[in-house]
Length: 386
Ligand SMILES: [Zn+2]
Image (cartoon, rainbow, N blue to C red; front, side, top):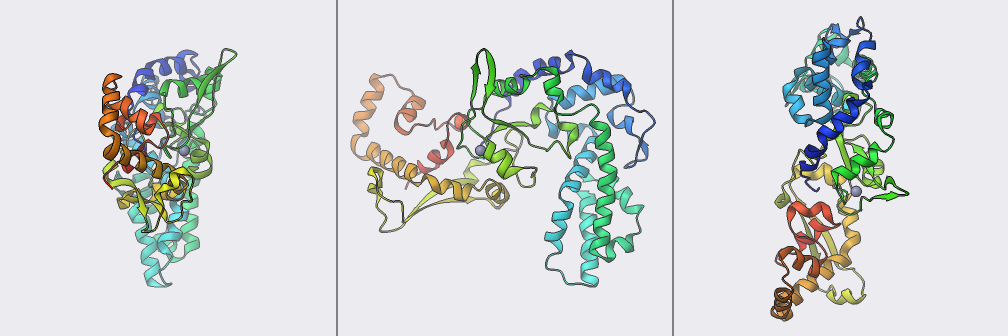
């Protein structure tokens, strides 16, 4: 829910690239790959997917390590096919259940099965020719005939895809980070310098040194999970510093409907926290009352629904009703009673707008700094007129 600027990734990227290729492992393993293995998805050799010459492979490695994934996807047609296929393998079974849920047996369901596959072949990212080949090489009437046949179709495609991933895994696997430097994971967290989980904007991401060694108390989420999107296991843009709850308990391998904090910006005006106050609610609870009669709602565009549900933001932010009331009381007090006195103090102290907001509300209300402190976006929204 918090947009992140990728400036730190760009600053760190060449350093990261040099480290990863430094020991030569990543690049030299190319020479050991089986050049005869077939890629069942496109009828070519597996090696072609990673580059049919070492020079091409080297340039691909660099892109994969440090370039934006959406840009790589645009520049490399085969990688775009890989992404579409990984998405398909990851979600086809569960999507199928949802899409066919209310469709009765018979012709209608048969048509729905056909539509299910065809819509996965023609996607917003272009035609998935790997899936199309698999479709054309199957007995279409049989695949559409029953749910079980459709499941077999998905399973067989996934098996072909997994073979490609096993090939890719000989070079791109997460443990390479440790092979290069046992502290590299902590170093990445330090270099990306995100202080609060961008998925929830509630929990701190801590980096520190103990006995001279870098430590961290956060996860490095693979936005695209390394099991299906193996090719991006080591991509700097695929690492999202996040809290353990968001990464491990809530997001898991899910990507559908989740906004990538670095590359898919959330429109903050379409995603707002509102405090709903019932008539008889007692705002004096700032001093220790109960929070009944209050509710935190998230007013949002439909496109953020999955994101909000995945991270349970609706429920989790209702824990912070007391913070909401505190903010409103501070705001009222500042506006109505003591504003002019406080302005005088701020002026005497030479406080700028950021310092003033930190003093009053404990957060920086500048949108580009939301990742610095917990609940920044929440407080920012509550500062809107009552
Ligand atoms: Zn979180």
